[in-house]
Image 1 (cartoon, rainbow, N blue to C red):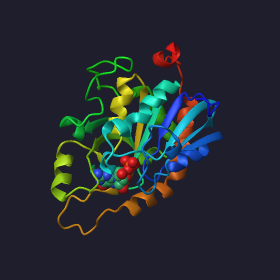
Image 2: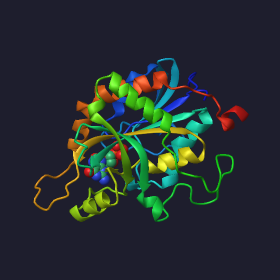
Image 3: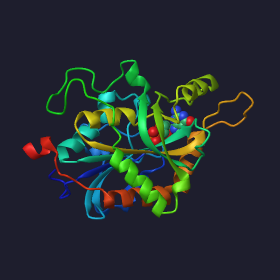
Length: 277
Ligand SMILES: O=P(O)(O)O[C@@H]1C[C@H](O)[C@@H](CO)O1
Ligand SMILES: Nc1nc2[nH]cnc2c(=O)[nH]1
């Protein structure tokens, strides 16, 4: 806290190739993860590994330019540690972004999916950042997860997309987290599709679970970077460079959407932990 004058109300976690969201912040203070006690290091290309504080449209923000993934070998506690740091800093709203592959016929590379709900596959088999003793200071032992993606913010984002003339790129959908780091086999892709998953990635759900547990309001979006191959006749295959390239192509659209969302969201300043300190 002593290293920056900013007291953030909004936190943003940048997905693969979406680190440019941090560039929109004004009056920046930035810190390499290696200089922050308790923070792991980013090891994935497209995740710079910096925490950036700054102002955006009258709101104070903190932005993770690079997130931590389970497949990097971090425990889920470590991957989600920054979310609890945000809570303690006074953050009220968390914006999570990611790159994801599409399973839905109506979602094309370059589209933006507003996350309406998620399937946390690691969580379903017991890999959950909330496993272990519960810290009641942050939240209850058995937190509800229905409604974890705030409806008001989802509606606001769709409204903004219409005003910005990008509504045709945008729709709501269900994100599923798988462990990675390999992309899906065709049989896995077909299974996910049948289960009603619209987009699949390797992150986000644990962050949202921890954020919801400690009472943060959450907005999430997936940039669709590729179609997940579902046919044995299809010779296409996905790779991380292609994922980053779509991030670069859509950087302006994502930036404008997130900037306007932050500008128009209401902040209640009802962070109970932070207010008690
Ligand atoms: O951090 P996100 O979830 O955006 O990263 C996605 C999933 C993998 O880490 C990587 C695959 O290209 O992008
Ligand atoms: N699991 C998974 N993660 C991704 N991240 C970006 N594209 C994909 C994908 O097709 N599958």
